[in-house]
Image (cartoon, rainbow, N blue to C red; front, side, top):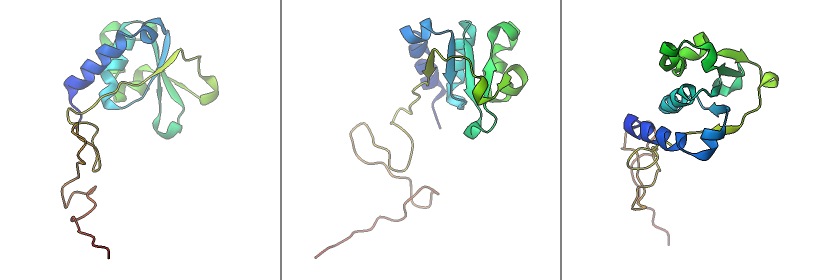
Length: 142
């Protein structure tokens, strides 16, 4: 599970960057950990493009000028895209000033069965976990 505090910190760092400040329209993925970044973009008056899963439905355009100020948090959530966003086909996209993705990391590094820890040791999913490669085996070659 991604740490919500780390997502907030990442969004804050990215919102302080020069490309973010200069952009008028940004593309931010719909992942839940990027909700703080979408909210910051909307609060800063930036239009936010959010792709639909597998781009089947194109994109949603969240325009803060068309969203009531007290509903920006709801609009930044996955369930708010349909209600507060405008659905756009791929050929109707406005120019994107800068595609943004917040680097949200778990304190131990990226999640996954073969992720690396900060000390570069391999981390594995526990045996029995769906992502586990199975019990550890010793392979002896002659």
